[in-house]
Image 1 (tube, helix red, strand yellow):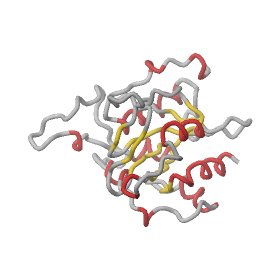
Image 2 (cartoon, one colour):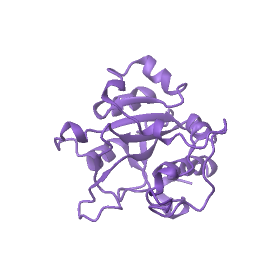
Image 3 (cartoon, rainbow, N blue to C red):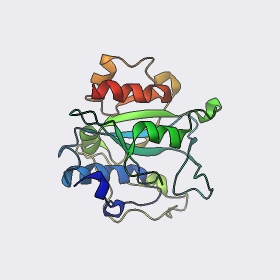
Length: 217
């Protein structure tokens, strides 16, 4: 199967549960032969900041013509292909952009780099290697219930995700992002860390393409 004949409707998607959507997406891409079976060429990328307010354009959940929405956090999947010269690809089930999109195009259209953001809205990116993500992530969806215990938005049909170690919920560890925790520069040890650290590495928007360029090299 190639991306040209890929039907987005074959992937599980529940609005406002992007972390679970990406979890299921990583599994499905390996299952249908669009990615390595173990997900070694895939990365779950969490987007947020300390204030939990990050703007993204071309999002289906937006009510505006330009598709802008202010997420508390968002999660996408980025795929790298070491063979050939194929650029990194972004898989975002919540985006109206092509599925998948080349990373540079996705960043240009979704993040609008020329649009100057106040510091409270600047985006940070937690990059987690998919094999680690698939073994370690857990969510019992508690963050999607209000104070009365009712769902803020209907949950996915599948059972909640339980980590291999039995953890029931660790989403907060993935979306907790402080500028002080971001790497100062992308180096070889940054690349090495993403393959061993449960919660990946935290980079700034200006470092995202550099990170995946080094990873693909």
